[in-house]
Image 1: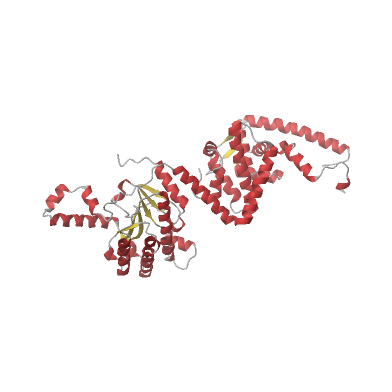
Image 2: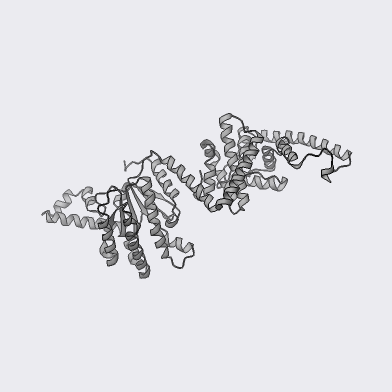
Length: 351
Length: 123
């Protein structure tokens, strides 16, 4: 009905209209509201919102009672809505009004989600940190990583609120380590070290797991990651977060195979024996993510529509959700929409 | 000066009467019909056209209230959307209703103007 680029206020106002009406007129009405509010003065926006609000009430009343509200009632209501909006804007400022609208919209999304299927495991590809920083005119694109990591804490708390028990966050690929310049990699590693030593382990809401080869990481980073795993080992919230650092999906499959072959060799099996008996379960048992459910939903930000070697094996049946926003600008309502989209899909597991 | 004129209503009273009782003269559905008389337009173009021609600002809710009622009664019809903006055009019935209403309005306007000019007042 509304496009992602529609301002929040457009989506909130549209919510006042009956669902059937929104189906027919929602899209063009959203476009009109955008045209009439974008870049306009505060009073012009308040006037347009007032009129659109009144229109919503009018439409609902006409559906309920079969006729429009009397002119005088309409005038009084219009004056009341207009003055309240103006007063609210004067008291709190437009920014906070927007916040209120945002919370209202998030609440509506959560209500829509109630009782619907929830993914057990969500994979997050936090893409677009650098582009976000550049777009904001920051001195260095690397700074985006810092905001990106802070944002990851935020997103984890949304997962917690939503009741998701398994999350895997793609923080840094093996390719990132080799193809980015060394200053940026050093900064990214520092960001990751701070991330795992911060809120993540302090609040003890998540048990931490690592996916990736620690030996390609600087010592301090590898140590910080191991420490986070240790510290959170006794976490009994039932929530698991896997940090994919120095991670590559193909490498993971190779590592799993290697580990499986070593295991069977120790048991005295020949290569021919292994070739005869190997199953997908054998591989899964040796992946970095062994023991965890496969991700039901993978979300990638920044508009790129690729998996880029993320959970290559595990994502075979995952639902994919791509969001235009850069990772630091990925909002809770975007996250809730991803969950809503997941709930609406029919999962077939290849059948 | 105005205050000295006997029988003059206060400003607020006049405005109340205009909006309530004479409001039909700037009826949003009528304005939409008139705006579409020279060709199809989408919502925003209608508001711009009506404001430019009559000085009346149609808000989004008012406009779509009018559009949905006119469409229900078969006086206008929707064309395929261009990007997200959907143009509307008059139907034959819409043209008829607009012509009839405009004719009636003109009779009233002519009557008012001619009698006023009889008293030496020009509009």
